[in-house]
Image (cartoon, rainbow, N blue to C red):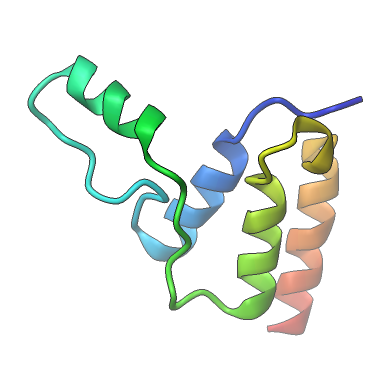
Length: 85
């Protein structure tokens, strides 16, 4: 089973940093926002801990089958992060 959704990684990034992986998203209309998202590569915030950045990067890998197959796998990794903190 391959994951096809980047949203969990984007949501984790926003929860931890209060910033988007796509930088400032234009607010002058939905088409401008969509174009920005489609043309921008995700960028991780520099203030993430290494283990947080690795987890988010795993969720954002370009290949669908290279990402976590289930949210449960991500939840397990999040549990490990909180134990390590």
